[in-house]
Length: 317
Ligand SMILES: C[S@@+](CC[C@H](N)C(=O)[O-])C[C@H]1O[C@@H](n2cnc3c(N)ncnc32)[C@H](O)[C@@H]1O
Image 1 (cartoon, rainbow, N blue to C red):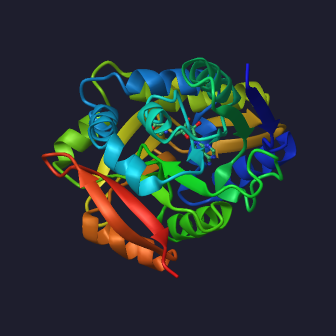
Image 2: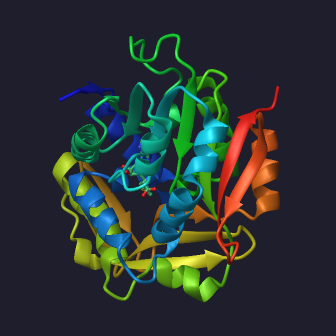
């Protein structure tokens, strides 16, 4: 098959340092990408199927409805997706744009392998390149014959930018501008709406979101020889109106100590460890963010409730 995988995953020593930094932070907070080992990727796919989590269905419907318009706006070039996950969204774009190559970035190696294998079958004339990396700290795409000299068309769906708080979101968008070397970016963003519906979307009745968050603790046990009992942490998803975001956290059920990579950490009862944020962007907030990051929004496609938008960004100068 026409697939190549480049492994730029952070080393274990970097992972240890990240976790140490996050546990020392007040409140404790770990980078969201740690949620996505193989099991985390599997659970995230299940979250997308939950009745409360409408984001995936809404974005896929928008992409299918506007695929011709988006492809005409995009023109030709190599498509670069940030955080491909289970590849449910890029299919209509690849079908219409028919790029010579598709470059998928994801921190989850299993997600990359499975997604690119599926796409290679349905798009045999497009070369598939996977880069397993933390895209928030990547300053250049690897030197690669499939990329060199090609115009780049970026795709960042799933409202994944919402995982970053304001300063980091600006930094990441600036970095993507650099990675795309003058090319455009199609950015999917979820908008603020009824807080009860949003909290339910991130804490579904079937408990899949809670299992996804607790899997982070299993991952730490596995990768950093930890002793955490995931059942001693409760999951919470809370809408924070002033910040226009959902904050997801694991809350310690009691005073307890945990060991990780040879260090001991004490959690007080009810102490929170933030696992993830999901910042929501109104069209005006998205335009502000784009302007601060060196981008200009040229077009917007949205659903009939105006709850989710696809934005077409071009470099501002
Ligand atoms: C919220 S999911 C979205 C998946 C897919 N794009 C969608 O819209 O359904 C985020 C995806 O990005 C990946 N991811 C999260 N943070 C990342 C990072 N910093 N660098 C690379 N991949 C990341 C995860 O492994 C996961 O597949």
